[in-house]
Length: 291
Picture (cartoon, rainbow, N blue to C red):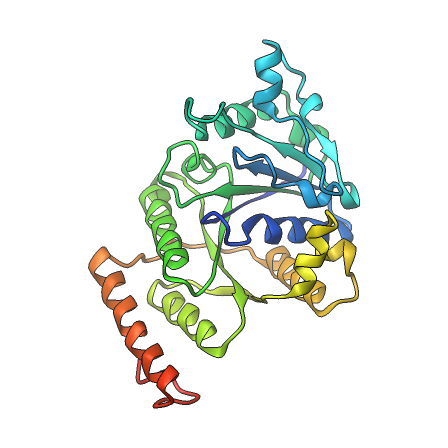
């Protein structure tokens, strides 16, 4: 009998640092001795670049466009710490549905029993967006992933995307869909940013898995085509990612979040906007402006 595989999906709006976070989690788990596959689900196919010195790999859809029958091994490449790297890919720009690449790629690897063959401990799906497309919802909808985490900042549109994700998880929760493990708060620079995320998390009945500070170390590492875990292993930022990986390693119980309605989210945002004006003007110091 094959051992259980912990399958995780990490979501977040474009540009939020989702792939950066995912790749560092994969690298940290590999350093802990686990066999990890990172499965890029973005049509840009750049999820795994920093695990492979900045290099791109052929995607599953690229290979399927070249020939009708593809050996799944042709789409699997190794990166830092022997992390297995796969990119689903997408259609040509302006043609077709990007989400279908996820469906096709997952089906290919499952049909050929790749996960069991590689004796994996973790499969981590790096998924674009906020579940507005059926293809991108596949890891949640079909229960492929057991636990979902979302990367957000304190910016409203990132929170908006996270709230939409919560709606998708709630929608599929009664049909065997994946549940929410928690929120990864990225680009934390100021105390009020933590407070915004903490307030949103409290109102939606979930938890913060880790606060990840904005750091020039990440930028330097990625410019050299590497994760922070590889490029700056002794840095404070690497320790933050290692602790996040350990928390994900220990995580076993996910649950259905309680997303805010459109009116609730709008009112929540307006309240925080007023609070930040008060903070900026110096009327409030070290408190949450009564929120």
